Image (cartoon, rainbow, N blue to C red; front, side, top):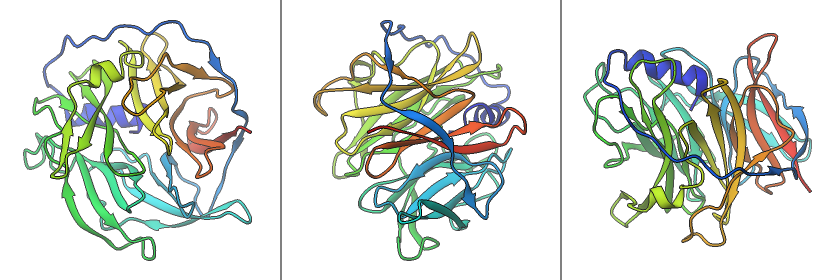
Length: 305
């Protein structure tokens, strides 16, 4: 989720919680992935505030995102005209938003919309440790998101541990998210990828998560997953604790049942950048970038053949 600002929000929520000794092995030294080029600012007509955690719907109709809000983060959406290559601001997703933090929207091909909310998280909420929610999105009427519910049994149920990112696979069967650990320091103690699979009666955390993400998870912070249509290409953000800088990374695997291989950093993307999302044809990678002058988070993209 919203990375540095998002992490600050979570720290405010979790002020005073206990620490952790969670560690992960470092990855093998990778090369760079150079296929994406030509970074460019992408305006959203009618919207000038922060654009964070973008998600491009795979039917090419909508761009979902959230603002930066401190304590009250909300989810918005824009429409996309493929003929003119123009995004136009539409509205907030009012039915999802609360006085707490809502963000990181992601949508499967069955129009099931997943997102993060801290509304019920302790200590200020109803004592529910689960922070991943889902609803049925109506592409003909985006304001009509129905059957809102928590996605149960994914949280670690430990105060200070929190899932603050999520990405659903296109077929809706696999949910990628992070286990975050917070103790009130400037950054989380840990943020590593795990995944869950829909068993037919709900999502179940997978015991082989550590093996599947063994080359991605490190003692730095990994988050903001983006999965390709075929499930074989995985983009994500890494925040390097030593430098407090962010990087964009890519990993692949030969089959959905296989672990991801050694990741490679995506070249050509600079600045404080986070939250990759692929265009429907997967030739463009969108992300948010902090403007170094105004400090406003803006929508950017890079392109590959």
